[in-house]
Length: 366
Image (tube, rainbow, N blue to C red; front, side):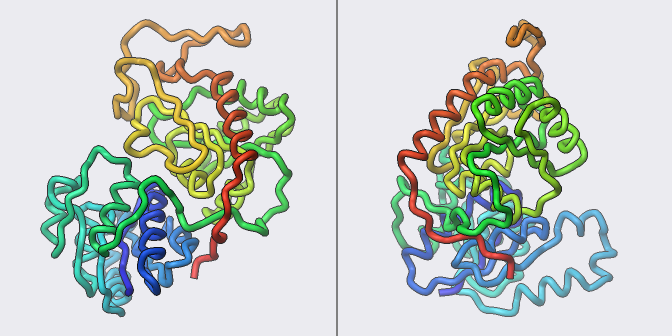
């Protein structure tokens, strides 16, 4: 059986689709998959052993370029590439109008979520098979249920396997025992306060572990440098590809993250992760897998799902280290560095005592 997966973005959503593909690969002997994905995330599907062909699409860029993309022939070339093969099933795992249109151009029976299960209900009109999946489930389980219903198999929802694992030979010979801080994210309301990152860096460093700080843009690079300033055993990484970051995360002993796509990448490699949530709801889209700890806010307004914090209550003051400051966003006062560090130590110890078997390693993009 050959299937086409349409899951174009974002980083976390793409990673959330991998367990469903693993389920399908294990249930259907000989299953092979091609995958349509935004060009900036094209490295990821190639890590999975069931994926043969990665088909990059540039919808985000084409929207900005307008007719220039059409006139250049780039869109025509993408459609021609998409239609090279006939598929037994075309599964739109994105559930948006843009992904449904992409699926419509492919050759094969189109399937996706029904109008009551999908984010953009109009998209369901493009499918020949429409599947009802409860919205209240985590995103990983929703995609797993979609795939299993379309392809006709059962799976164990209590087991999770992303189909990728810790590489045996990493790109770099990393220092043993390091922890990664995933401090970069999109919404202002998702950011853990910078003084908390610095205090946590001191706690981890004093415990004898190295810290690695990745970044994706200039703002994140400057934050990483400020967190690292004056703290022993901290390395601010250079610019990394997604595959290079995957190797770094896979070799780490533990991870601290905010609500960010890289946290989901770490979860795919079964890394012990403490994820700090305030504005968003981890029950629906938090890191998912083994050795995960989600820290959430005790404020009544959380999770607000707002990009900007709208808290108007009493100021949340942190007195740690003798330098009081107002915690903003206020919801992160429930997750101070000492608590995060204690949970991280607990998870790393648990992972050391109960190691999980690896099933493979990330492949380079084809």
